[in-house]
Image (cartoon, rainbow, N blue to C red; front, side, top):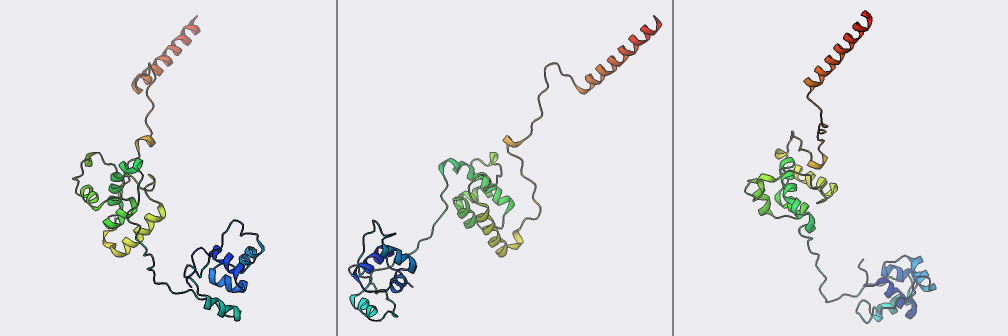
Length: 229
């Protein structure tokens, strides 16, 4: 059932200016009957200015009179000649300026791991354009040589739930494009474990072995000299 604009303000006006029951007002405004009673008691209506549904064309006085005469009746919203607002598509996902430079890497990752995704799905996930996707796919992008596939979820360009949802849709439509075996992506530089640099004076493994052998030989020679003496 369609509900009036500003339901609480409308409920305040109906309570103050009509003989309608709490049940009738609750059914018309979409509020709970206990909430209507709390508004009537002044517990939750402080600061709310009543809104006349007759003046703004949401109710007729005849409709109010009809329901006042019979508590079993339910108020019906008056028909309006005004056009209803149309729902608009959300369009491409907005990407913060600080993360826009990461989008080419995310596109490369999606093309590598999920080629079943349509270009429109990739655009929806990370807020890019089909032209950019095409250039990265055919390696004509200006920065193709430096692109490193990176998961858009870990970079904060989309959520895991959104990605999984689009992948499920794509796999149902294009099962032949699903990639079974994909080489793992290299770890980001900040996560790579680098070998510790040699401390000053440290030699190769061969030098260390020769030093150990020399130390053992010197020890044996010293022991023999002590025994002879």
